[in-house]
Length: 259
Image 1 (cartoon, rainbow, N blue to C red):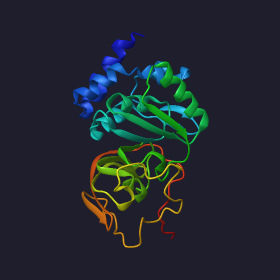
Image 2: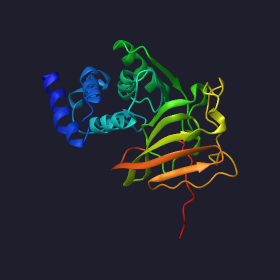
Image 3: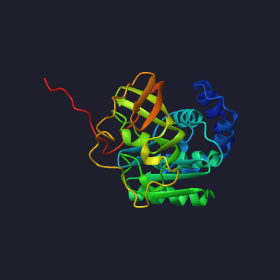
Image 4: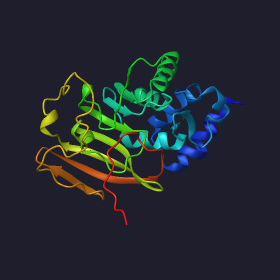
């Protein structure tokens, strides 16, 4: 297989046609070698428009979805990014190419170790990989300039918003299969948890495991375009595009009606 021709075809036929036109993103997709992050058994499928199995029911996202997510985050040099779901390490490498540092969390130790080895082999220095449950974020390095979830959530836990800096962006796929929407949340003013601008604490781990609101006076989230606020912060939220991806593990589930 002519690798460079396959890469170029992927970019022209899959990614540009999915409204990814940011030249920085397109250049990054050329520089970061996707095939180096694909498990050996699936390497011939590296540039195909499909999810690639990684084990544990996890997948490497399709090329066009990774590219669109990257474009929507509008990353800048020097920014600090949280990635929930390291997977193969490919999205980690893409994020690291555009941002200052990426903190990537993976639930499965073997996937994290394999991703670490791939990133090291490709000479990606500005990443910190940890094994842990990021279903409610990761306080150890918060607040962040950007957060991206590589698995879907039925509802977006408010803890993620609280871990954004003012101006920070959160990209998540929200909903239940087959009706999911990629949503972008932007922090307008931060909550009291991150007014100081530095790390929230050094103990790591999610904000809490109860999945409840950040405080009792908080308001309800409007999942259509608009703003969400409580006494501690204001966030704008907009729907971007429809898609469907595997769920993030251990996220709080909404109450469901039983007939």
